[in-house]
Length: 102
Image (tube, rainbow, N blue to C red; front, side, top):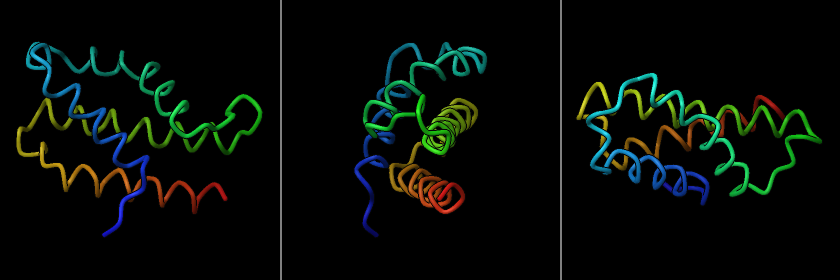
């Protein structure tokens, strides 16, 4: 399967967080607290203009929510830390969001 550059970027973001020494000490509220920063990182990567186009905001929100969801699963279950699984989930989210908001 081919993956979009955004899927690879978001997977890298996930692993940057879950491989940090602090990850094991985080709570789910801490992960929710990353949402705004992740949104900005994804927005910059996509070069979208969410302040001008509602569909681009919704797309970035969808992808951000998927990354946050993956981080919650990684905190709860170590088995979620499979790169292929994370790549696939993010790619499916991107494809679904594009279909939904096009």
